[in-house]
Image 1 (cartoon, rainbow, N blue to C red):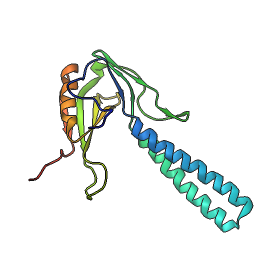
Image 2: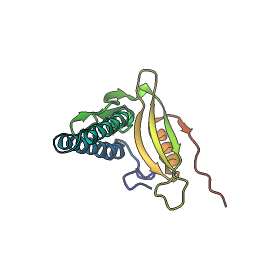
Image 3: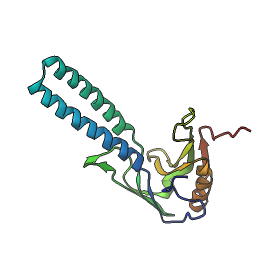
Length: 181
């Protein structure tokens, strides 16, 4: 299990959550690569033939396009969950405000705890494995909020515990890991 993930036994309210760390790492790398490529384009404009500069500029544009996708679809949240409400802090990397929920939401604006099972790599020797993201599912007009990331099926227990603490039902999506003997 992820060392930062909540353990089902020790889960209590108020619950402080931060599911942004994975996306912050990805975005910091993407921003750094963009900055490096822009520097390379500038240096090559003064020191290299134009075809090299144009090639680097095209690569920089492609990386920038992917970075925009990463920013748009990141799903991390930081905040505090209580029995009455969830407070979500603004999410930002290097001063760049990221899309996603922010503000204070009453708990009656949410309908369930969703455990989203995700598969891991299928090749032997590749790090990673099955994991889960736990969501506080918003009713119409209220965003879904990522509350926790877990590994190896622990999300089911954490989801049940959170649902019991909040008086909400549990939904499960995706395929849980099947162990074959």
